[in-house]
Length: 418
Image (cartoon, rainbow, N blue to C red; front, side, top):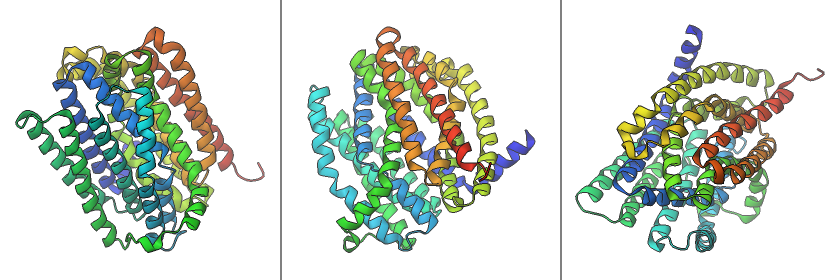
């Protein structure tokens, strides 16, 4: 145990700004959602959560694996000119914005025709804005510059939280106006992150863009992008299914429990952000990758076991204090999901290891199978068991993806000739 905590401290020292970035971003999201849950009716809160989830799913469809590819290739220095790769990916993502808005609006008319149109456009714009910022952050991650990301994040999120509180409690902002605060805060993040990119020698140049080169990039990126989409979909699809098969109240209870569960990933996720860059650097050395995986798996299991137990034991108290007794039903969600916390951590570790080695298609197919399993089980059981079914199926999906990814990783790392 002492060795594991020593290893954890060593990894923490090397990834402290990744941890601080994770803490600030997750704390910001947690506070925003907490305020919305406490100040609005559960049905309204459930509708907001559904709209956020819907926007994130649509945004992920246009991700195309570009952010992860930018980080991997800049880290591995396979693209000697970081500005060239970054500019091509960023400009192409910018050109996709009108198609994202149009397709999202069509789906909105089909699935949620009663949702306020102004609220829809503001939320969907800042979600796409966040995806563009993600490309910038991944370019900096490839350069191992996590400090600049943290500084840009903390300043912009502090602005959002301050204006959010002032707008809600003193200026009586409408819900759409509160979402505009987030939109302007993300724009501030843009300004700060571009300054950091320039300091790292990565500049945005429209002259660098070429549709011919984008086709080549997309051939490599799309399998990774599909894996990201499938992974995100199985993580979020239960929100959409609950909203359609049950109601927004069920969404509210489930999202609070799931949000606490995902917030707890801060205990290990920062290790994997830096770990992806590390695996990309050593991807051609199987022995080095095996050592990386072996070191991290012990740490991840220990962290996740401790956090899982805490989630199970403390869920009632945490929800009662933070969200009041009105959302007490969310505690059962946390208790069930706590059983899958080790699976979640190991699933993330095997995923970044395979992606870092360039096995994008393997991860893509495995996450697709996980998504299909998740949807089928949810469609059958949510109408009967509601949020309990959604929670248990999430646990099953986490372990399913981990075991299949681990099986393939062992085959890949097996010494030749054995």
